[in-house]
Image 1 (cartoon, rainbow, N blue to C red):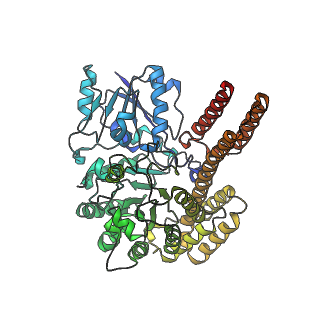
Image 2: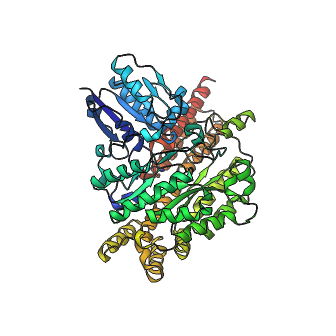
Image 3: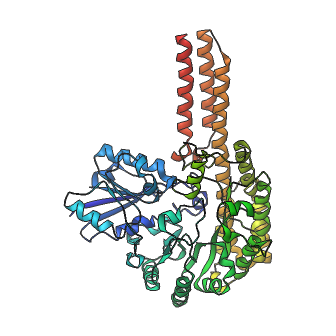
Length: 572
């Protein structure tokens, strides 16, 4: 019997999921892709999952393994390379798949076999070839697989106590073709769906394994196939009622969900209380340029605002993704983003700097316009890999201002958004799980204990207002407060990293311009420089550092440049 080892590569959430630390949970989501692949192995294979968001990869793991399987996204690029190097040193073959290798496999070294695209139909062929000793270097799926044949993920291979949310998948693909998005390139524009019975079987397994709580339907657009979604929802609602609503559901959808009253009602009845929308920007010109007409209405001036409000009034919290750096944006976009998010009441509103992802229509357009920059992407929120229409410095500073305003150090703006949400969010009895006073008090104090002294007043004022005006929402309010703490930490982290890199650039430029001729004086200046840099480096909290942030690379590049300057002067 062969032994196989399947690790999940560390996925940074800005360096650490600070909200989960409050409740002692190690990771937001389990590695659903790898658990699905694990279900495709014949029973004679011995499998392990090492989720590097939960535990470290030990030498004993590599000694145990005959082969290592990895699945990664772009943000896990640095972590993947580190795992590959360790496997190469240990002599353990590596198989790589997932969205990142599917797009960038020609840039990844040290992998023995790539299994690219969606694996359901190609993976058995790979295993047969492997058993015969004839496995190829690259396997590609020639068509989009039938997901009704996708097996139930091996949730039994993980310890559920380590996770905040379980994930299941209903559909793949999206009918829209946004210029910056790679989803349609990876999964196509014709959404393929599982059957209702498949989803019920996955729910049943999670239930039998003891899971109670949030379940995320990880579809990129849950309503991409409206007919199949409508067929699924009553079945899920029946299952939830029979089991007394053990799961609270969340998913991603397009903004046109707001035009589907019957479907929204069915989602709420099935147990959905949150939906993530790709709102991107309130600027209609930029939305048209990026081929996102579903976010625009010629007949309704405040369409995006009204869409969010309607979904809230149905009983679902809206989380929204926003992008800065789109073509046709000008400097007014920064205030427009802030005002829209604050006024409509979207507490969880991650802001992204635009990245041109290889293979997308946007990447191809920008490349034809000679605007692509050859820089690594994936870990740093403020790295541009293209030439924006706006001045890059203005864009980066605007991005910093938007995030620092939405997640200000006191969290006052964040809690204002939460209160706006609760003023418009329809209470749904079966979505509001009753909690004991002791449990709520413990949660409340757990969050309070993590907040800084200047955040506590806004937090306690927020909790007092919710307790008075929206008492059924108190448990949800405490959870939102934990998320606010997380995003403020992420914002501070990004600014610390960016500030350190800017500091290195300024110090290097001053050092180059010093033009000291005396060797001893030059040596003293260099030592003083390294001392200042080390002190600044040490001032960055350890919790703000992670492999993908680029700090170590920037520091190594800085030292190399300083020493090269020294060698140049010595040779003169």
